Image (cartoon, rainbow, N blue to C red):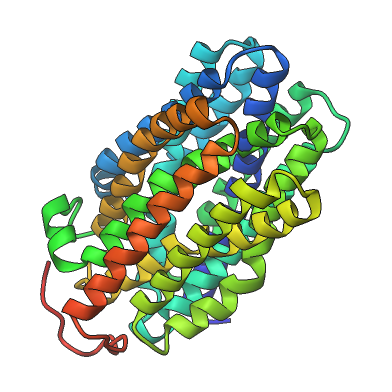
Length: 392
């Protein structure tokens, strides 16, 4: 195996550990607060706390990575996430958990900036979609396993311990990998205006993914219990979102290497909007339809971010991968901070189905924007890496 492939395997294994622990936390925390009798606003506090921490990590992570290097920074971020996770066992308190979720989010942001920039520097434009698809496929499998594990009859303390171990283990492949490692980044950050000006569809897609995916994925367990499902069935329902995306992530990524990636982004947004309408109107009454539509929603909505990142990196100069990843994650986290607050307000107005009314409306707006961009700037294929690209 070549050094480059060894480094890719190392970072993908590490991200698999991260998402396994993240899947446990993302499902366990809202269910634990719900069973403790806290209102849905407490769950919104957790989701918002995670997004604020993620935003801070996306904003400062590039500078830390540039100062300490990718490997040392990765180990530091993984340790921060692990220590914060075991601290959830101290008490069941939404304010404490909100702070800890923010710290975990900070660490995860740094880890994902490193992982995505590492992979984008290891490939060229005509294979970027398929590599990012494989990366996302690994994430989704690990996250779904973490979510589904909540359906087992185990104590919360054991789940916190397993999630902590997963975060700590993520540092091992990166620290011990013998393959080639990406060089230190030239740029630590790129302005939001520059990103929106050069890749408006990718920027809008990442922002919308934060507005939609974070509150829907974070509050879906409460949606399940709100329509009468047991906590175990709610955990399985949420896992079907990840499982649904598994069936389309790889072919979608390969397909995006063969045409303008914005067409794929448009199809994802339109499908997510239609699935959300179905969940809010039919799925809440017919359980088997609910599971099918959750899988369809996950297949479309949870696949958008990776295609947006690939499209943005197609137009980025060498040495800017860390800055691009950080800027796109910052856009995602800005949406994630706002999204739970908006979604909670709509749920309070319309009930549990309001979560997907909210998601349907925003996904439709994104689809219309990308369609307009395809009209303004005609479609084009991803260009080979050796072709000179404008600098950001």
